[in-house]
Image (cartoon, rainbow, N blue to C red; front, side, top):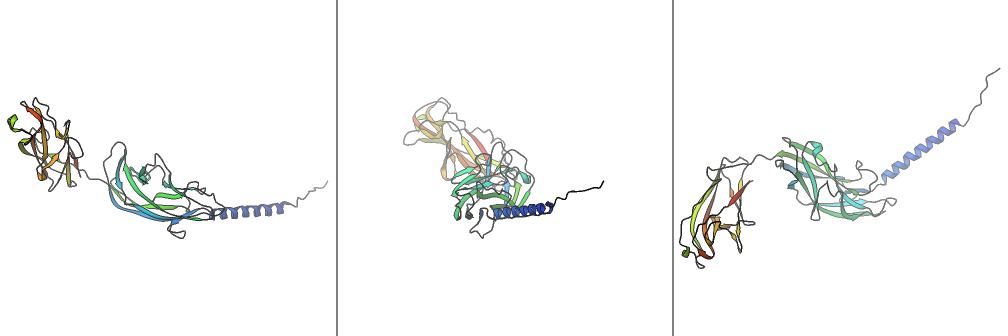
Amino acid sequence: MSNSSIPFLGGGLLRRTLSRIFMLLALSLMLADAQAVICRLNDIAGPSRYPLNVGTIEVPPVVWGINYFWRSPLQRVQVACQTPSNEYTDQPIVIHVFPQGVGLNLYGLSVGIAIEYKGKIVNPYQDFPIDTGYRTKAGETTYFTLEYYVHFWHGNGDMPNTATLSNVILISIHPAWDRHGASTDHMLYQVLNGSFVPRPARTCQLSVGDGNRTVRLPTISANSLSSATPYGGRVNFDLRLNSCSAAVNRAAFAFSGQIVPGHADYFANQGTASGVALHVGMREGNQTLTPQGPNNVASVAVVGQQATLSLFAQYYRTGAVTAGTVNVRAEFLLTYY
């Protein structure tokens, strides 16, 4: 017996044919990728990235919910998007926060990003992507101008001592159905440069007795208040702040209380006298402080870590006055800047 074999001569031809198919497939993929929609700054030969330089931003203390604490200057961007003839046509061009839905948490910050476009603040947890209103056209270059603001917001979470970011991708501008994915260089990106630091603590101490203070007005005759002379019994008093943090430059006192129907600028009397209310104001400029906004806030400068708010209080006739007591409660909320 002898060993015999049957040669299969087509093996080399098959390998060469498959190689050609793989080469053609790779070439077709390269051509497809080269014909993607490309968006650039100013014109199609322009850069693919442009900066938002924010300097140093102070992040406020942690609060519940969303606290928008910083808004950029108006971002006015000239965009050109070139669409090849074989690409999808009539695509919406959108703005995406990138990284999507994460904000800057990837960089150790409890800071979120939102875009204000056409008067609406769009939070990445709600309405992304943003339709710019512009669309691609097959075989054409679309030119348009985008105007928007960038907002940073702070919610629940811890803030590190400081974080400096350089060329971190903030948003991308691209067709909505970009089949090439967000990691390619076909999109137009805005990148962020700057530092985030915790806002220094801002506090002051009210002087002893000023936090729960009783202001006594003199006893006057009910007949002394008339339509011709509706005010009387004026008393001056001060509210003092001291031991303010070095970061405090101003303090705002927001007053609140019960209003008098028909006389909203005055605090209502809770005592037994009728036809009388209380008028509270700042001595500087004789500015009236109302029980409700918008004219209920008095602001003072903090100098040398202390400040004084100089006030007055007096009776005010609201109608026919009958004798009795006048008791008024006015509260205030302090805010530091």
